[in-house]
Amino acid sequence: MSARDHATIKQDIKACALGAGFDVVRFAVAEASLRNREGLSAYLAAGRHGEMEWMETRAEERADPKILWAAAKSVVVVGLNYGPKGDPLAILTRKDRGAISVYASGDDYHDLIKKKLKLVAGAIFEKYRAEVKVFVDTAPVMEKPLAEKAGMGWQGKHTNLVSREFGSWLFLGSIFTSLELPPDEAEQDHCGACHACLDVCPTAAFPAPYQLDARRCISYLTIEHRGPIPRVLRAAMGNRIYGCDDCLAVCPWNKFASASAVLNPREELASPRLATLARLDDGAFRALFRKSPVKRIGRDRFVRNVLIAIGNSGDAALAAEARALLRDASPLVRGAAVWALERLLPRAEFTSLAAETSESNPDVLAEWEAISSWV
Image 1 (tube, rainbow, N blue to C red):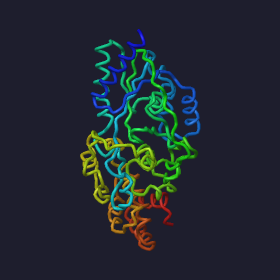
Image 2: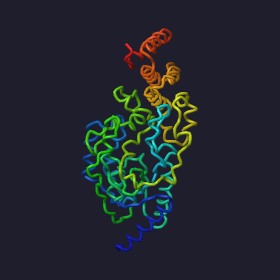
Image 3: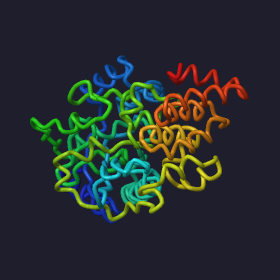
Image 4: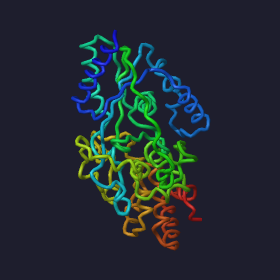
């Protein structure tokens, strides 16, 4: 096949992907990068992935597209703009409200992207009879390095992809194909001397530029971490109850970004009241977050996050919400309620409540002693 034929096929695929609603389309070779393989190995060896065991169990596939799918020769990397309409950090000053990451404020982007990817992949198969497989970020694919290699952007000092056109706000997806297509030119790093993303991190999750310790990252803590959030990190979480946008939002390249035309944030998730969220039982949680990525963490982990935010609110009126959850069925929720009350109540009232509660429920006393510093 001639270079001209290759160019025509690439243009055809690009037009198809743009027509399906993607904002940017680039091409990469489906091969492993020694730098990325070594970086992943070092990351896992240091334990910085925390409880994300899936990263370790499928590390070989993640590091090498050929191991994931031997027939792959090229990767079509697509990006979908999800730029917010306003300042995503403005909600952080509203201590009685919960901050939900921009990407999770509407319907689950996995479903949105996969549907579009299947349309494009189907067209590639029909026209060129080439094998295709589609991947969103639930598969063991290192999408950010692939996007960098394809010239879509570069991995910034916060380890996320940065685009000169869309800033930090791109959902990524990929189509692996048996078509052998010439790759696009890789993007260069344009972070320069800037370290705004590192400085803004509330929990100091970046041990060095281009390195992330997920165990300190608020996105990890509120989404992936299954147990009680480490006490030393709780105060720094503020009112962030699902994910964190700080390092993304402060990137200077966002000045070129535009508001998304496809991400439709739900009004009820824009600035939800902590008091309302604390009252969610399992059924109400599932109803509120139907079709939302938030639903996957479950009600107990979510209410744990809400209680941390309540404890950080400084609003004594919210103590009633934490008090009501001292007898919750979930030990995770009860423990977070204890911590919230420790933060909101005067010492004497807190100690009195501990004694009063433990008289009728010794199990709660054990949790107060284990999780709180009330004694």
